[in-house]
Length: 187
Image (cartoon, rainbow, N blue to C red; front, top):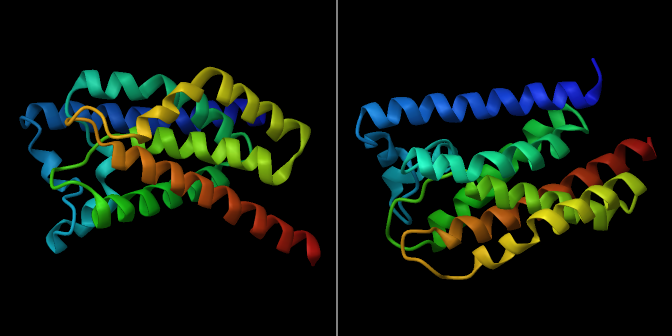
């Protein structure tokens, strides 16, 4: 199967999961959002693994869907395993950052993952400096560069902390992937 087709299928599966969860969450009046991240609350630590799968509304999910599809496909072009590793790193690092430093509120939404994919793609272009990664990084900045302002405090109902720490998680994931890849080539 061509890598672009595999990428579409993997990201499509992630998007389908997000939409199914939002449908169920809506049926339960968004009670599942209690499984999001509530900073510095020990009982909310498992939310570090669930926050990106939960949303405040269908509109919230709609806003995240297109950038997730586009940047997710770019991330998945390097393989399904790499996509899963990058996604997990962003979820955990972004979630821990929000849990440690976020405002006292429930933090949910895939926008942390969107910012993570953005950070990963741009940082990967910088770290690898291959024609392909620089091209993808340039496209990412051209189309989505404006989101960078989302890491600044703004509206009280928007988790800029999730944006900031998701971005950090993506940059860390790029560095981790490049270091692991270079170790494999040394053998």
